[in-house]
Image (cartoon, rainbow, N blue to C red):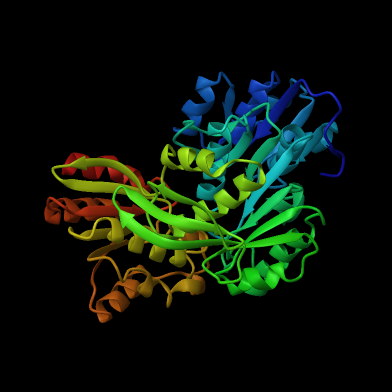
Length: 473
């Protein structure tokens, strides 16, 4: 953006968001509105829930990208990650010499400045871990600010502007904007960082695992010497990354030498419980309603962070027991005629495997019907074609949809749902391929019986399958 000014003015009274309907963009827009700034936006995909989210907050949104949306000459233009250089509003920003920035730049300027940032990074678990931290700080009276990539049920929001000293952020490794191809988390200087695990993902921007590791390495080596990195001990990639940093490292997990250790785990629905030791000293017994071993680890990371912030074991325990979870993370949408319909965001094969295993562990008596829609830029590619079959081992019946957006992927790189079903059948699993969502609804409604759990996994709306299936049941 040659003639525009990539900077944030000292005084900002008005901000325009290009591509405002992204989850993070809408949250930031609402946060700035709460701070007394006049906010406008535009997008070409204006529909619920983001359209209603913004309408409730009286933020006007233009449908489509039109240079006329900038006639008001805002003090600042925030450019979304999905915006291309040739976007007509981006072109006008350039032409008129307006001040502009990326979403992470704006977050750092308006939300992080003057506060202690807790940045949760990693391939999996970012949303859940950061949500737990935000709730624990809030329930203990710390009045935190946060911006997270999912709706935290306790707040019924994915953002909050607080007056306390902490700000909790989900640190994303995806690139920032068309004028800044670095990761979003490069913009957030952490007081405390969490690294939950590192795997290959985002095949549309990363070439391979080495490329991903280079990005995370730049993040962790940039953490200040007196700051803390809370690193999971169960991932060799995290261990390698943590070995090369100058900050204070504390490992968490089940390793004998880790600072924060989990022992004596148990499952007694609705509780998922465990003991925590810090430096070989008993810290406390905790329980959460979140299911699965992966969520125990997410919770342990949150406990370590909050202990550093000064919370007592009792404060943490009380907060955990009242934590309601995150929308679209093992969220029970409804139980109809004894059939539980559950929504989950899982799409990476590791997330699918952990989610399927966790749900089966909590519901061992009935059948687990796993429904999967591959629609991310990675899951629609063949990069994990040979890995996905093992991810469904704990499911009883498996329904795989044809990827809905395959045209976005070069033909020789496309994922095959039919091949996945064949591979699952070869593993003696009952698996079925469906070219569309209608077929899945009809099939599942016909076979579901009381005691079954239907676990629906997708990072998108999946053609409103949850409500439609509940109606069919």
